[in-house]
Length: 265
Image: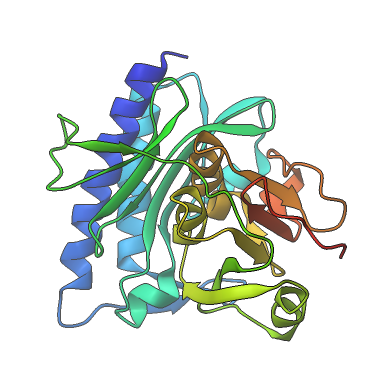
């Protein structure tokens, strides 16, 4: 894989999808439907998914592309694949809260090694460079020419005063009970894959997720966090979270800076 070209294509498609999403977001109204699992889907999800899928297939015809909105791809598998969540945080999108992201990642042998997370309503974009290191690019964003980039690095956490981030729409009593086992200085809520990015920037030390997620929800943020020196592990045994699992479904997991002393489940 030519990682320079991969990141150029992923960045351009994320920006184009973000523009299409914002056109719908800023409209007076948009249709909301329920999928078979009762999760919501909008025209923005579907338009962004179609745009990204077509662009990736054109650029990388020999690589499997798995996307959230194309159910036919969920039964396919490969050692190397691209995986897409065109609009992570649909509930935040519907509520017009801005915490939604475009996510594209490349997985090789179970590890998300390159990825991009773009939050168009917030004007924030995080991605891995060709060498695997993670950066945040500052806008305005040109689809063809990257702007100023700031390298990302996880925090050196103080386990007596941790910064924790948790889901805005999916936080529950089990998550609160787990967080209560730590000495927490501050607890923030955020939507979508932005939580991974907050750990990657050092704005948070720990992000536990005790709820159902799919690999397309996490792969891009996971790649960014890895590029910043962070880790994502399974909740049950603290082994690395891997990709290409049957049905692309994740177990519970914990994203964290390496210095965090994880509590037993």
